[in-house]
Image 1 (cartoon, one colour):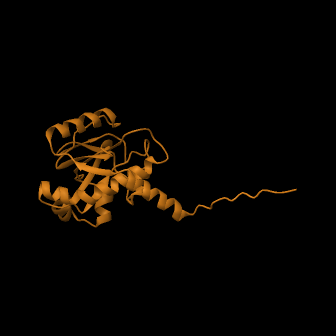
Image 2 (tube, helix red, strand yellow):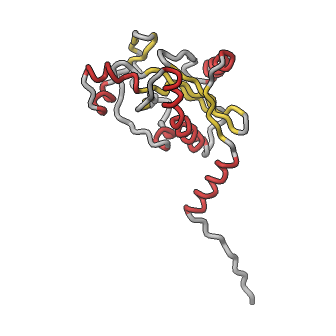
Image 3 (cartoon, one colour):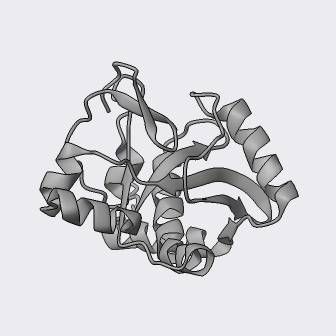
Length: 196
């Protein structure tokens, strides 16, 4: 009687990481700042159509980006001025009222993030990669457009709809929950009773 022995290749964590990095290098992901009016109009149209809030307007200083793989859009990102009053953020930073007023412009808010395509096991990886790449160019782009850099980024995740996994994967830190107000105009907040 003869027995057959099957050789099974053992896959290590390092192998998986190497394979993932090679795939990332092949897919040619780029983050493009939109500056032309027609590009911004297309961004507005897509975000209004695809974002769960159905709202494309960004308040205050803002930048719009599209993430592309091999020239095809895979995500839309929008950054706006930071919230005026955010107790958890201000406490975490250690801001007093005068410091907050003087330095709030150094904070940008990821106000919109729309990942295109169906949700899949690789969506979180792609989303966190897009966020990381966008953050690498955000401060320089903001400096160029508005004359000052960005030192900190914030966002708001609706816990009834999302877990914020892509932000966690991109090394963002959860610092607290809001009181449930949303900015509807440059200097006006409205209670929507959905703390994020």
